[in-house]
Picture 1 (cartoon, rainbow, N blue to C red):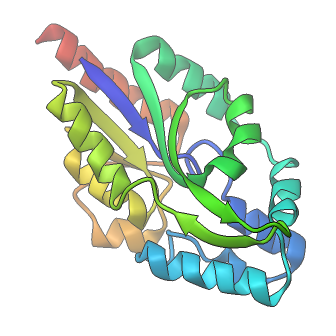
Picture 2 (picture 1 turned 120 degrees about the horizontal axis):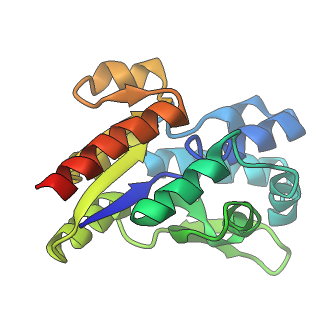
Length: 205
């Protein structure tokens, strides 16, 4: 029996930090896990930028409130949930995710959380666990599930490697070049075809 594990940003919804960068005009906030492989380095840089520019949690959530899922994402999510259990495994935060998950029909979400000060400033980030994406796939396999994992960025790679089947969805060229063994797809229809083939092989077996 398969469980589907998917990244959130870049797969089902736009990148939150890129949208914040566009709203605030702070170009450095455009950097994501598609650019920087070390998540701790990336988040410390983001927190420093927020402090320097006196940006609070509300400044970010106001941007998130204007965001919509990617075209075709909701239909794809609904299709996936009809085939197997879906878990969204993301490095986003509980304080960010609610409005976006609502628009996706509330799939199960595993993510992290933020430490917020009394003044509404983002003081720190708290990982649910280190290398949490890989450990989700590993734990599900320990429960005798098979795992299909999909993502687009450096921080998804360990989950894709741990899964029985890993798929890159709309990755940047640098990620494709560094991890050429994963199948790559740009469209939900093609992703659906790949997954249908895997699931039908399981049913046939």
